[in-house]
Image (tube, rainbow, N blue to C red; front, side, top):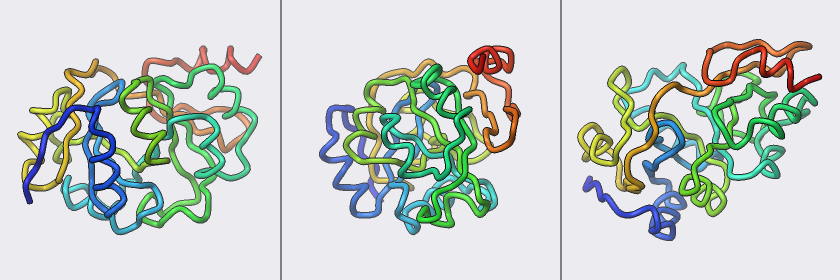
Length: 202
């Protein structure tokens, strides 16, 4: 497989690949992500193959706008809506009850992780493509890439397309918070603290 690198303005090309079941790497507000359409089970399975990713690790979903949330999550808790209105787009990933129409390859459990990235190019792609299953664009266990070239160095020949949006900010992964209980539970610490989350609920 030949791996192309094109500018992030080539959204139509990216859509053609995604809609035909292919994978696209693109910049986000943290690192470069590798994504497939969220409802394409076969394409999502190919993310695991491209990355040598353990199959038991669920893949988060990125959306372009809050209005897309009910397409991937059911019975959305008020807590999550409060966090979304306060911290999205941004480095907060919420664990929510999974929409039953989502493919098994996203998550074998009853929940799904969802985020809106704070990156204009990423959101333009997500608005055009719809919800996407996205994880870091690297070989599992290797450094997460912050440039298109770093993606190419790891995934050349494994994926068809990389959208080059320059160097990403990199840094700390998003805060991961479970919103399915009575109180928020931080599963991975990140830029947004538990104190900030609790303050948003007041």
